Amino acid sequence: MVAQYITEIESGADVPRLSARGVTVGYGDRTVIDELDVEIPPGVVTTIIGPNGCGKSTLLRTLSRLLRPTRGSVVLDGEDIVRLRTRDVAKKLGLLPQSPVAPEGLTVADLVARGRHPHQSWLRQWSSDDVSVVERALAMTGVADLADRAVDSLSGGQRQRVWISMTLAQGTDLLLLDEPTTYLDLAHAIDVLDLVDDLHESGCTVVMVLHDLNLAVRYSDNLIVMKAGSVLAQGHPRDVVTAELLHEAFGLRALVIDDPVGDRPLIVPIGRTHVQIPGS
Amino acid sequence: MNVTVAKSSMAPGVRLGRVSFVWRPRIALVTLFLAGAAFLAFCLSIAVGDFPMGLPQVIATILGWGERVDEFVIMDLRMPRALAGLVVGIALGVSGALTQSIARNPLASPDILGITSGAGAVAVSLVTLSGGAATAVVSSVGLPAAALAGGLGTGLLVYFLAWRRGIDGFRLVLIGISVSAAMEAITTWLLAGADIRDVARAQAWLVGSLDNRSWDEVRVALWGTLVLIAVVACVAFQFKPLHFGDDVAAGLGVRYALVRGVLLLCAVLLAGVAVGAAGPVPFVAMVAPQVAMRLTKFPTPPFVASGMVGALLLIGSDLVARTALPITLPVGVVTAAFGGPFLIYLLVRANRR
Image (cartoon, rainbow over all chains, first blue to last red; front, side, top):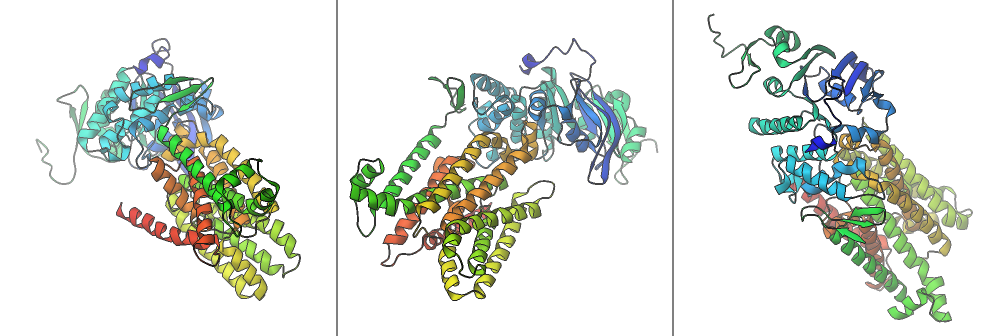
């Protein structure tokens, strides 16, 4: 459904929509990301993983223009993102930041409708286009039945669907999600990630940050593994995820086996206790 | 007019030529009702006095159909007070709606954030330090200007003290409360060392009063408020995504720092204009947006309705102050009397959550 906004992906098969070139970002004197290069391939789900404080969210925020790099540039569809108008970026790239807030009592429909903001102006605050796009965004995320409910009365998982719905209403085929499963229990996390996969199926390019490694492996076609502000590895989970890499990136001892229900690797962490390694 | 009505879940849109907006019947009706009530209170404020008049007489005279004698009493003697009430009420209501929206906190009104007390402190310093010289100039031009400057200075001070890679509503309120206390301490200190006649004048002004307004004072407040509200009206649409936090706003293509800065400046200036015209009338700016939210059942303070409630509250309080007791009280005494309990109600409600 969202696919109809999409400029033919097939035509420019491997041209990255979004890329970071020699990007350095920091807060004040502290450099978080140093000289980083990364390309986001079109039409797939890319997930950024890495230990706490490695700069995952900082990278996502830089890619979405929330942060301005001190050196290097982020290129969106061939143009330097800081040279674009904020509004034009918002028409191409939908962003769901960490912990957004909704005023108490705001309805789902009103929240999702706000996603149309980049397409509106002072004179043109609400059009029939807006109505149909918002209705589609509500339907696609499965929250159409909740449209009249107050956002604060929903469960965490429903709320996250509503926020994704708002991001979809922006009508972009490039979505950046910063930890969309935080604070969700596993069932709701799976629910949200299934939705992300639906969006991918409909033609969206998705970039997200996830904490849970196994969920990242299961749901993404492209992993960006970060450590201390640089990219350690990038590629399909099948090619990237190995016990050595996990040890190098996270200092984690783990067994990498075949996922019994999927075609991806499965990470089995090995801690100090409760472990009986077979054969040892 | 082409009215497109979507499914019940979505607010319908209205299109007039190239202009389209969301149609929310409840807000429109409540705002209209409030505007009518504010106008009625305005007329009533003119009608009530030593020489009582009928409402039809007042309305006719305002519209220019009245008699000479009535015109003198109404337009020259009573209009400034009523108009000051209207303008100051609207300015305070809109100012409060802006600060509460920006801070996302119902306690963040100009009086709590120290803007009003800062304006008061600077104005009082003008009264006491000028030592009675050139008092006429001081009270008509200097006082409003000093109040405006004081409000602006304090507003900036609070904003920069609260700024830490963004604005957090709670920190804004806490810093506002402490700056407010400091400003009140300065005022008390100034009054302690001042000439007794200046103290009397300053005290009367500090309570907040609409007594003895002149057309000149009202005109300054009126134009200031009109200009500032025009700016707010232009920027308000871009503010809508800011209710969801800075990151969401940026993601939706809003230059949030600019939008917030402009609106906060407008809020501070509106409060400054109001204090300049009527003194630091307490609580109206805090109560009005909250009442407007409850009446319109809107999740964020509606700007226009807040202004209307502000005007209604201020003129209404002034009427009570003038008629309830044999002696005329300053309006600030009445607004404090209802505003105090309302503040407690807000605190109790915030604690329950």
